Image 1: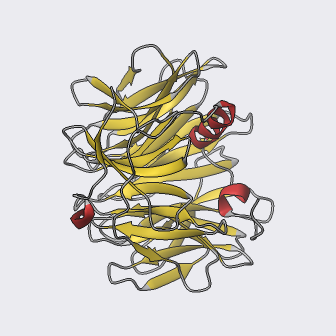
Image 2 (image 1 turned 135 degrees about the vertical axis):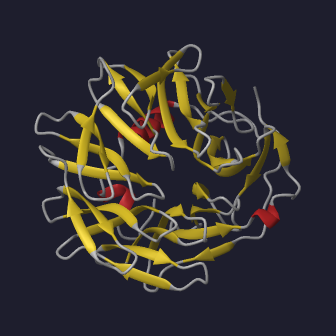
Length: 359
């Protein structure tokens, strides 16, 4: 049990996807063995000044990173430049401010919470100006992704407790959307061309992946025999990644779906849960998997070669984002239960411990 102050992941309401994953993992018996040693490449670790809990969420092509950290009092957002200098910020009056995603221009989107823990969306321009936004009817807004054009997608909850997707254009106009038959929509990522991926509820149990085109047309999809499909990212080529599980709830699998609709399933070594988080234009994927020795990071190349990694001293590794150069950011937890940020260069990809993804 940790003794440090409550982490942002504990006080900030998480996405439905992360909640389902946590619930699933709590039901799993982690009794599988690791088939080979995970690699331990050289990594750069970082924390904003005064941080006692650091969670990076997004890295752009230039190497700038956004996320949030706990300073012992409130949760603040940060921007880390490619040179390693930090700019920290929080929305006036907020008890927690989370940087969720940033584009090459340096525009950041995210959300903040007031004292009543009601969440609102925000945009921070490259010059530091903060703008609040909420879709009409929202009682909880959670932006997830911003593209190069400044378009933002995410989800919001209405007064009836139902979630909907939204698209906010660069000029601030917001469009609400739901795939046909949806009882709850969760948008997770937007591509440079404006395609959006995410998932939606059908009834109380089933969840399906969707792809929303720029003109608002929907394509829904599921891996074979999927009970719940949860896409997490889309790249410039229109390829999507995510996780799913079958009705037996035995294992959470990772998947990648190409633009033509072909789905490839993969798992981390000995994993009971595999969670792809981000993919670059070349089809390189990063994320984490869980086996009997804990949670580990991975990189999967376009040919299906899967390389595992953990920062030195990590007891829990959670990659969140990969940029066009193959540089990865995320967080890891040390033996004291404290989370730190990390940066992994593609120069370290060719280390021992490389393993082929399982079918």
